[in-house]
Image (cartoon, rainbow, N blue to C red; front, side, top):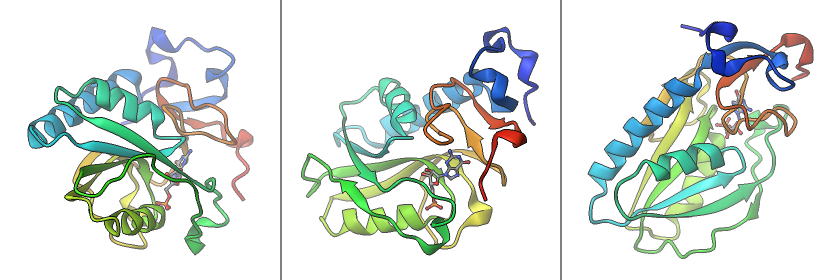
Length: 195
Ligand code: 5GP
């Protein structure tokens, strides 16, 4: 259920939050679920020294909290791709603009993603990574918009299901802004121009 925006004193309206119509996931909900995921991953990957791989820039906030809550040795690396463009996404056009620094051959990879929507981005990046022969490759995603899926992608660790709505905060942006909101919410419709 949606959290009323003014329910938490932590979310006193300010210059950023005044643009938010509704909180979808509160800071507390996000942090609790991220700790649960970190617990599962720590149990599953004991002794395997996993490499967490993320795509800049949206996943940085989730990745940081996830890793800090993990209790086993692990490392991280990032890729970057061409920016999210709602008009392009159905065409699946993904351009790699920054590659990983580390070799993934023989490593246990956990691909960490903020949102899986159509799955096209993830599917492309998984193909790229698999070709580099890691020892294993699993996916951890914070938000799953499974109703929009165009290609099947194997999600092993999932934070939340997200309905058909565009959200910002906790790393997710609208035109580069709102990433540093500690919660995830919907923007006021008059501010959105997704057409
Ligand atoms: P896919 O290739 O799965 O359609 O695209 C996933 C990407 O779309 C995510 O990594 C994210 O950048 C973007 N995306 C999907 N839904 C949202 C959303 O609700 N808010 C924001 N800010 N980005 C989204």
